[in-house]
Image 1 (cartoon, rainbow, N blue to C red):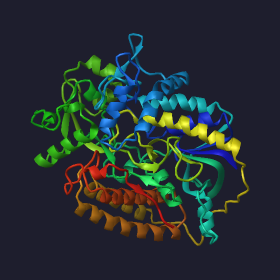
Image 2 (tube, rainbow, N blue to C red):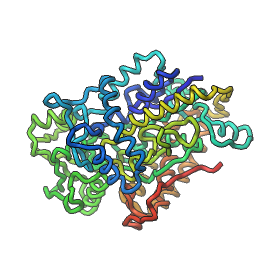
Image 3 (cartoon, rainbow, N blue to C red):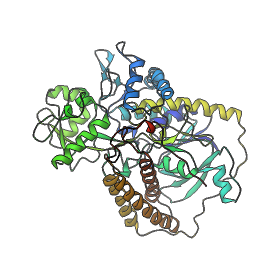
Image 4 (cartoon, rainbow, N blue to C red):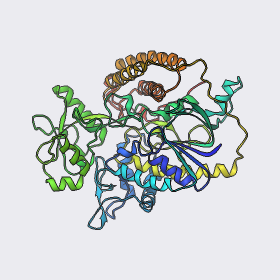
Length: 531
């Protein structure tokens, strides 16, 4: 048995592990390589009140406005006011944020009323992961295990069901089943505390800014374990992902619009003023819907982000990664606009938690994109995601450490994984075909703009897919793609069901059947599983 089982090596998992290692033994699990996570692809930065010209009150107000009435005010207050202290801790851990003239360089992004985005050029996430991994690898209390994917969470009630016993309240986490990707073996890992830091689920959509690992594992496992899931209808589509056949999932940071970038049609016309007086600096949901509307109206493949008002040296200095990548693809940002389209980017919903990051299952914590803390509401304000992760990792560790001190370990034997009569599969094409089908109907039916008719079609399709996966799942031995496919289908179902329950348009959920907000809709969409 380990004290802390941490699933995921993004900023949430790495920071939780580092803090938890001061209190006990930590097993830190990643399903691929240690540096691979959604965090590593974050370009823009991390928001915090850092300038004397800014204020916590302004940051709070901007967050609440972007969240379209569904932010949890106490969660926003906690996150914003603790931001500077958490940033200083990152700096002490070796994160090298960009400087200009001796001071930290601050970007401004859509929805923000001031410059408050600390960044490391345009590779902020990669820099944070680099620094935290150095600290993790040097800590003797942390065992970092690569190429292992969690299959299911184990709780008291999951064991009770297997043994025909009545459920207990509250349920308590006991560990997880883990699949060794190389050997195909599944083993039980007992733990006193489990932290889900598994990131998002962008791969449930055909077009996404997320890496291939973003398959919604934490949300799906928590749902199967009986945890409450909230606000899954609010999927943020980033307005500007590079449109190019050789640029898979390459993000064009919101910071470019913060530096004066203008969105134009193929004719050269700037169009955002027709949708919002803030134009390119409007929140992401507004910009993404505006681009989507123009693409559908005109039948174009993309719109264009014009940065030609900046010189080559300025572009190279401010956005070196984006500038070089565009150059490699034959796009000269200094003389021609960048073709961009919206793509699935971030889930504002997830495992519902309290202000300490704890789910409805005792000692099961969810931190980062897999969680629904109330900070983001119906639409995340740019660069608040990394901030939320570091603040809630801090709170979660404090609670979890106290639990270890106050609660006895208990004697629970988690049974071995039962492979049953499963055999090795020689038909991996079934998995890839089904994965492609899920992603296509989610993009077509549950995308930026929705209708009840499309949602009902998606519900029917996901039900059939889940039946097919269920049969395949128990007939063949587990592989990482099969585990991810099962999780993606679960996430798809949760998004569809949540969207069908919201009879209004709010934030990231826009329905042609209910085109305006409704005061009756000022509440979370909470899904709970009945056994």
